[in-house]
Image (cartoon, protein in one colour):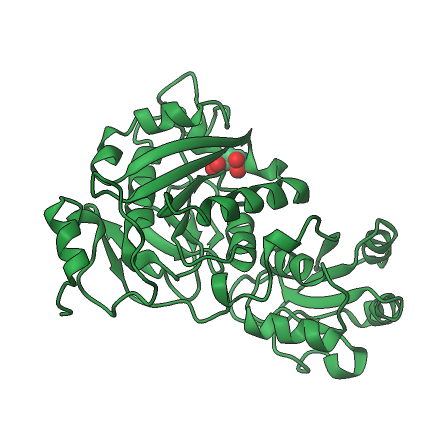
Length: 366
Ligand code: GLU
């Protein structure tokens, strides 16, 4: 066990022990400034979703309206938060997350980047709908240059339902955002007692509180107000990223075409006609492309649009030059990123003109 530092001892004496884990390597980043109360300062940025949802009947866990409850009420509903951190809320949006646009993603990231630069902010929590929280988490992971904890949180049941999961998820998210050992771990998602890497996690169940998984496992858990870590992210993110939201004002269009039997070329050509700068091919198996589609995809690449092979399977990773001769066709593989994550990385990468070789480098590194 690592011996607690003097700063850590001061925090422990000030009563913030639940947020601090004594085990594991020392945090790489310097200690954040601490408020007069001794508690870390956490801003909760609210965007909507089920965690801010309300229904008419407690028995209804799936029939309700998302994005109804304002952030100050969310915070007031969980008094235990005050024992963990000094929190304040900011209402960024009040929407269901399937309605997020690129413009809103950019807006949110600029807001989070500005908050992360402030000396009086030690951590940031973002409440969000579960539908696209995995995309927003990965986007922020790529473009916000900070080591301060950024923790996404959501819920599967509205606050009005029996066994609502939002209150504990929010308390856990604040606990993670307030913990020094959460620094430099990329954007995180805290739900269902687990701390997931924003890059890796995906919604795999659409009706249960245990909705999020990563094929590589959670980074850690938060249990009874304490963080426990089991692995660290290895891909570039945060301060190690070459992308910076402070220099990005808009994202290019990227389309996903879902693979199946009996495909039609129009699915691809209409995406290009609609302005897509890259197409994520959510292929069967190893990102396979039907023989009768290969010429269409080669023609699209010849017009300058990037072809990125991902897979509809969910787990595993797409091998380069296995199912298709990517070197010959000048295509890219999405590695282990699912189609919606690949869409985010492609959009960020293509904010600058880039050849397929450099785009492939990015898909290996992030
Ligand atoms: N579809 C809504 C959203 O993603 C509600 C789902 C949820 O948050 O679980 O915001």
